[in-house]
Amino acid sequence: MRPREFDHDDVLRIAFDQFWRKGVRGTSLSDIARDAGVQRGSLYNAFGSKEALFLQAYERYAGDYLLALQKALGAGSLRKRLIAFFDLTITNFRSGSPPRGCPTTRGLMELGAAEGEGLDEDARRAFANLVSRITALVEDTLSTGAERGEFSGNPAAAALHIITVTRGLAVLERAFGDEPQLRKIAAHTIDLVLGRGAR
Amino acid sequence: MRPREFDHDDVLRIAFDQFWRKGVRGTSLSDIARDAGVQRGSLYNAFGSKEALFLQAYERYAGDYLLALQKALGAGSLRKRLIAFFDLTITNFRSGSPPRGCPTTRGLMELGAAEGEGLDEDARRAFANLVSRITALVEDTLSTGAERGEFSGNPAAAALHIITVTRGLAVLERAFGDEPQLRKIAAHTIDLVLGRGAR
DNA sequence: GGCATATTTGACACGATGTCAAAAACATGC
DNA sequence: GCATGTTTTTGACATCGTGTCAAATATGCC
Image (cartoon, rainbow over all chains, first blue to last red; front, side, top):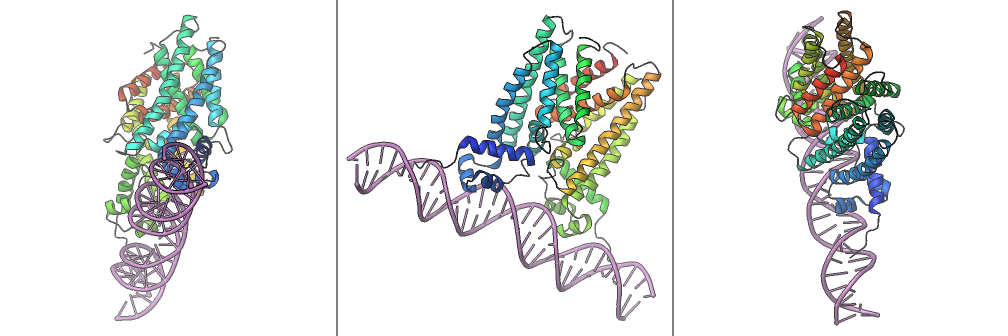
């Protein structure tokens, strides 16, 4: 067999960077091929299609991101953990210049859109999968917080509410690009969930 | 002058329907031209570009939608008004078959994406404008609720929080398509904001 | 009726996706 | 070492979408 002339993982990183900056539809395989020093045809041969390439690149990102979130949710009081969670979330949205927003939310709204196209359904599942796993992480955090008496309420419902807020923050980030505003909303949400004035 | 052979408003309605169903990038001007019985060139002549056509169609929608929201927020107790607000929001997301999601959120994430392209900035402003106006409506509602003793807290912060949740609901709708889940989150949010068990 | 003006129409250029067959590069067995 | 088979690379091609343009067309107005 003829060996591949490019590094699979390098291409995924380069491709994801472009997708994150310019969106999936706004990025052409020619762009990626040029950036990666690979022929366009080789990408089709290796990945099948632009969406398939994006999905692989996305899942690579999702794994890393989930680990980072897990770390953020693992230390300190419940309040501190939630603060770290929102901080990582918002910092991720605001990374790059100009800020690139949330890859999950952007990818989902871009690809989870079309009706009856097979691969978009795969994409939707990939995004839903990450969101579900993040929700589970938050729910665990709240549950242990409940055991320690730091939280009273329904952990499942509260986790879903928190995740909904983070998705909303991803949208507001695109609309207003106002990072202090995002952080205020995050702080307010934590106060609401933990009970205003709780510490 | 030669008269136009198509109805401006008809085209906007037909175009917005397609954009809403298939996304802006997923809809071609050929599609719209065929559906509207108009030549593609005429659309370019009348609207300039696909994005410009979308923006006009969107702002037409936004006006109608804002009026409907205003109505929903105008009657009954604060809790009832918030329930009506969320109900209209979610019902709007779930309209059509298959459900078409939130046009604002979808359009924003699709068009507010690219870097340094002039018209996308217009789009971003259009979306931000609607979101701001909805936020203002909710804030007014909460303020009058505060006057009546139905709400204690910061109306501005609470309104922003509520709007963030509705944007998050738009995202979760795409990810999971689970309407009962959306409604549970909405109910939970109302409880949180008004104070659990308040009526 | 004739002219100015705006719209329509079809051709064109360009870029993007995706397919395909031929060429090229390696691994393996002889 | 060399032939063979397999996979990747490469360039050509078909198709579709956006956007531009000039020529043709239809109307309002003088």
